[in-house]
Length: 187
Image 1 (cartoon, rainbow, N blue to C red):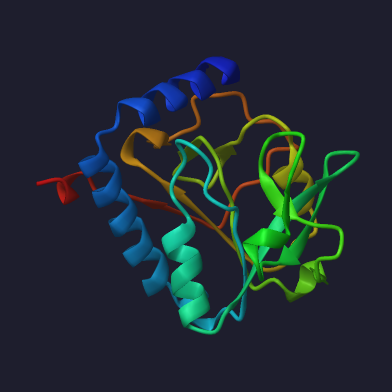
Image 2: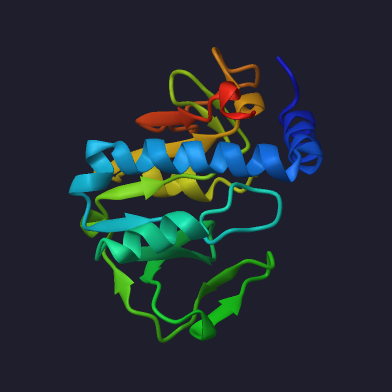
């Protein structure tokens, strides 16, 4: 087993060393895979994070969802490592969290957990069985405890392993699917 902290650092280094061309090709492939899923096509409400430095750029996914008249909701962190999701309308209404992430403001329209059809769960490392290594806050694991919609995560090739190489606890909840960008997408 590799320490979670070390794996998180390794993934962030990997992101920094990806060429623009590699990153673009991987993101294009992941978006195509996601949009082809029946879970995506049937979803009316999709939960996703806004793009943050180094991670997979979710903006094209958000744009595709909006052009398909899907409702996009984004997370807001709360005390006690809890989260709620609010409808993404105008980016000007967003506020920076303590973590430096844009979140819905207090006047956002919040959605009930059971109305979210598909949750795109972020992470740093993923295993074939759906286990994920997140940023370490436990927000998503707590949220997923009673989440009944579908879950999917997106991974660049170096973020995916056959078996978890980190310690998995009973609190670590897997996602339904992990989509992995194909290596051969780079020409």
